[in-house]
Length: 310
Image: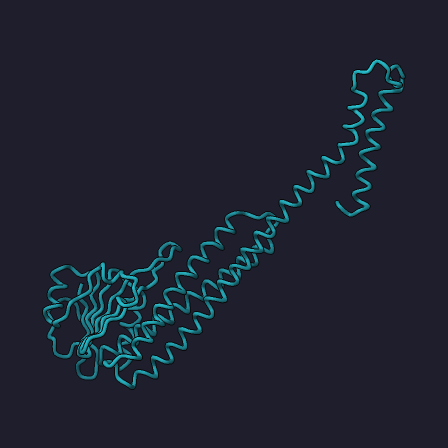
């Protein structure tokens, strides 16, 4: 699908389809385009769109490409479905003050930009790109805040839980993976912004905006790093509590074993097959042995309690 934005009479007019006039176009937004739509845009604006393989490249050199009159940028946008986070590539091309975006999925960021264009007087493609990037940074901030809230809930749950559950550890691990993904995504934006500051195409008046965005990105990196440290602390706390619980159980079994060692020794002595055992023909021999075993266990238990091992 082709969405186009036309600057006319100090307004931004939005339309869909390929029946547009090139004059006045500031933004072409391709959403899951067909091959015919791609070829039409390439021919109309004398550009070459990124292939799917090119947009998914992870090398830094493939993320930002600048020629004399054109800038090509590939970014990963984080998308959530059913609580699962994953990256989706979005490509940008800026040429002759016209922005061309290409993506496979709908993103809330673009819906927000559609609304903002009605309220802001922006008539150049590079400014629209900066608005998209700035909106995306705000969205990343919201993601980090949501992760922070989830970490706080897990922390409270860890304190209240009497019995440790592996599901809690899996939650911590999942949040660690998500935090790493968000951090990598933010670092990617930081590199792109640094490359943009060296650009000869972006107007000089945009540099201050870019510097502010770099500061915002740096603060997000610090926040995500703090979240990761908290998750590591919670993970270590969880594992420490598991160790304490295991030690308590082992200690209990050890104490029980030691308590029953003296009675076992007494029973073993009277169970030996010797012909002459003093209490063998004694009428009170059996009660005597029972009392002796009970006292030996009781004294051992009292000794442990006195030493505060129980």
